Image (cartoon, rainbow, N blue to C red; front, side, top):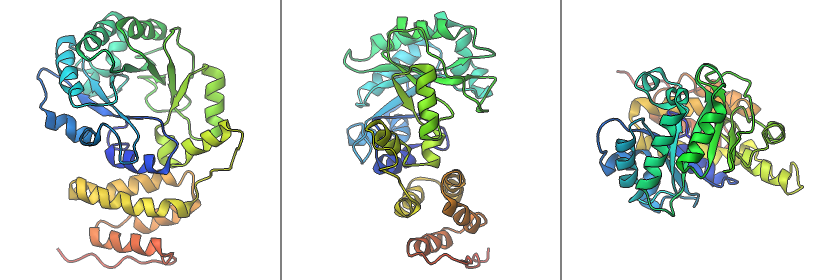
Length: 321
């Protein structure tokens, strides 16, 4: 799933290496009143430099957010020329700054405008390229959920992802999974942390597929576990902490190479914080690293983690300012 500031191209790379994922969607690229240069699309979706796929070979669909059909269409056409797996349209972002300008979840109050935006993008990109849409159940309530889903289908969306909460719900549990009254495939999203959650979601929603967000960040083996369950081999493809440790080091290398220095330590701590939900070992790791800010110290700690030498670990003192 696309999650701004969390599930970006760095984590897409690492999580698709673990396996089990069919497709990724980028964080939203905000479209206002201008035609964005290619460098902006490439900043959000660097996989476009590799055939629109992660290094593990998983295709990436690029997501756009905006409310002006003409501008959305022009940018979608420009983006399509770079070769993403498809284009997804965001009608679910709950951020106030986005909604204040009529984007994201704000459009769930106006199904007819949704249909216009989707249709404009659908006409602007090659016929073979998928155009999908992601929505929440509504803005203040779910009274227009079916109308919004139908508007997306009428506009030409080939697939609809439903984040099963309203804008008012934010990210608070529970998720209210339900089947949208459309004929195109529906993907369910929200509060899927475990295989049991996934099975309940499937049963309640009748969905065609699942989109994993925080759940797969907390348990990178979740997609693999779901595939094993579906194959009649529950528990046979479990990812353990030792499997993840090399990925943590790779993640740190990517973070240090691609992100600003001030963002690096926070991104590692953010991932470890979520991993604590699934792995007891992540709790100790998080406690050891949570006060570190120095890049060299964190690199040394990760090296010790790989060799199993972090028991009682004490970080070296940070260099004097």
